[in-house]
Image 1 (tube, one colour):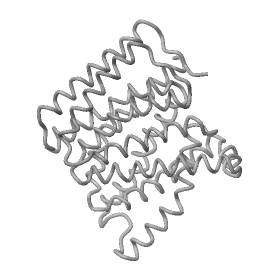
Image 2: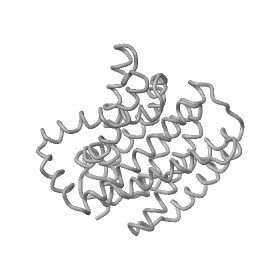
Image 3: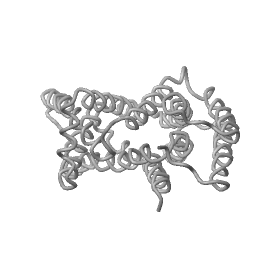
Amino acid sequence: MSPVRKGVASAIGAFFLWGLLPIFWKSLHFLPPATIIAQRTLWSMLLLLPLIAWRGQFREVSRVLITRQGFTWQLLSGSLLASNWLLYVWATLNGRILEGALGYYLNPFFNMLFGALFFGERQTRRQLIAVAVALVGVGCQFPSVNGPPWVALALALTFSLYAVVRKKAALGALGGLAAETALLAPIAASWLLWQHHQNNTLAGHSIGEFWLVAATGLATATPLLLFNHATRSIPLTTLGMLQFLGPTLQFMVGWGFYGEPMNGSRLISFALIWLAIAIHTSRFRSRPAIAPE
């Protein structure tokens, strides 16, 4: 399998998992969103650090983090990631899965914009048509959101900027994510200790709840590793179009599984977005994608 095909496969895997994860986050309703983010940060770090040690990358990660530039890039990417996590979990636990899906529908357009601004990626006429159709589809959802869609816009912006930073950062997928969680770990631990002092609990009240919390590490690390690999293997424009898979699954989970309100404009939006994906993906059947240099 070529690097581009591996990158595409990684992106599809990441977005498929992210599309179904609202079901998992809903099961953690017994914890506030900030505590869930702190837990997933620490459990992810505990999962990732042994992995980088086993793969002999611990020294590489340390070497990057002791430099001012490397430390800054990883801290920036970690901060963007934590902000996106917190807002996404908050929206999921507060019955706004569909608004979160709208944010990730918007995300590819930010990816395409940043791909052009920062990496000189160019869009073909077919891609521009696909973007226009998808933009109309996303626009159809705005009237369905109560008030300004600030959740959707913030989710799209933070995750697109995270992709840009990860593409520029020196560390690869595994090392980069390990560095991000390690840098966020002191903040996460401080929050959890304060919560424990306030509520006398760190991870729920039962063994089952404890293991659900522990699973946040695996639920976090698996799709992010796939996504980070994809950002370094394929153009952001391609990544942006593949990313429609995630919010579509979220859309179906929010509507079909949790019964969030649905109306005609959202159904029209759904159809237009998938039409845009069909237009864009037909490009790959006619000629192969080219990996960035």
